Length: 370
Image (tube, rainbow, N blue to C red):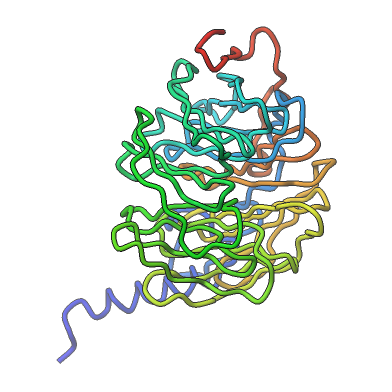
């Protein structure tokens, strides 16, 4: 007897094989058919500069789209952060410039509901901002120590930070310190993330190791690399980790269950700076990375094939972020003080360059003034 729906299963299996064999596949599957072999073109990969955003007065070190893709936040060594709004037609405009830090802003982190933003000053303090108004809502610090990384718990009611004494601290939104633990660390915690269930905080703990800390049992497991780790990025489903290394490689680890190295990506340049990478595209099929040769690199996640190297910046590209709501929008931050928004070839926006001026956004200070 032929099992029920066997033909349907075989058709779906055949379509999956076609999809997985296409290194440029970056859209919904409406076009997949058994009548002809499926093959996407490079035109589905964001490779054209649609906008150049210029609001920072210094190198742009970090940027991140909000979880709903409606905003982009960026931070700079000019001691400021910016919030950009993404319009329905894909154009970005400056919404707020956030000032108040006395040192360069290393990282930023969106709240789970996208209504608030954390900014982390370099060995300084964390500030929490209201996205709608641009007001500073609170400042978090531990006397005698500086913060170098930060993040939100999935419940949106607590935040955590890596300190320059190699410890991790947690506060409620009102600023009450809830917990602080150190663990077996030999490095300042310059990168950190938390899984979607809130059960594991992931941090750089040694030159060649990443710690996965169980937040309930306070038990640590480690991912061990042979080369020095410079940064990492967690996938949207919390099952995979991208690890950037000193030797100009990016490693993909599965962390759902046993930790295993499953892929390597090569081609970008890194010799002096911290370069960050990210997952992105339809079903996070691609890996993107900055590079010191002023280009953005894109690989197919499964095959490891380099599918694009995007020129345009005039300085090192420090960070990239793929819009989680739009597989065809990618942002890059550079030492040339600009942010580039990449999209599909053939997409035209009337005003490609956005500058900071009197009509573009407002400057917000930590006390809430403008």
